[in-house]
Length: 371
Ligand SMILES: *Cc1c(COP(=O)(O)O)cnc(C)c1O
Image (cartoon, rainbow, N blue to C red; front, side):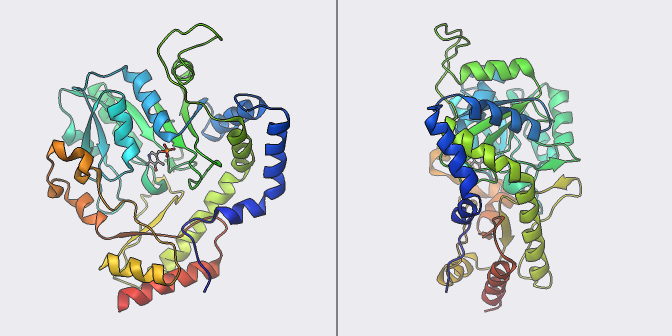
């Protein structure tokens, strides 16, 4: 029995080996390890991919979020609040805390499993300064609704698009609504480097300049530091790899949608399996294909026994994490998030996945839920 991994990075490397090797070799022979041609080229290509505006490349997705919060709102004093969903990766909350703000967790929609404008509206207090919508699994939050609330209350909107390269809401992608969108190029993401990497996309030129400075020791020129920043840059080699990959990203996202459609079809008559709901305004890029099943732990163990690399994103909601114990939020305070965490499974999905592999995974799930 062969293994079907959650994501198969080897398949992608072998398919485009010559292009990758040439791009990396070029970077090494020109010793463009920081900055350089590949870096500048990728920055332009990524901004264009996002819809035309300004991209800033940085060290990882967590830094991207931190840098934007810092530059849009200024350093916080640990009393002002930023709203985010509890159902997300820890980095979303970490960036808020690093910037000096208090994370305020909200619940999610029971069908799309992402934040809604209604839930955000209810969490606003006189201390609220910003909203971080998370386009989880590759589906964008209703950004029109979020922007209306933000305008009414004068709030910053920082989009966490770490799982949503190429996604859209009514035809417009991350960063076309909010102040800026933050991306991660962690290897397993839809657009992944060969190590850590991140980017910010914004339509605001002066914000892009401020973030560029903050990410590079607060400097514009070589020796003059205008603000106190940090070292968060994307390596030349990572930029070279991403430059190759971005050419195929739309094609790969389309493959992911096709695989999701195959899964949907396989599960459509199986009532025990709840498949993802996609809002009609959204173009989903399926970074993850997540289902809800009864007896999740037994089904997950069964998949692992059959050498299927399924995962859970995420098994413990942020409001229930040990690190936030001090906030004293009851698990049931966010009932949908709490319940979802106990019933979800992420199934393998990657552009090179074959219909036979999809079928093997789907049949394994169906067999297990019927036991
Ligand atoms: C991956 C991810 C991040 C963080 O990105 P890193 O590059 O790993 O720092 C933030 N938010 C979400 C939702 C993510 O999936």
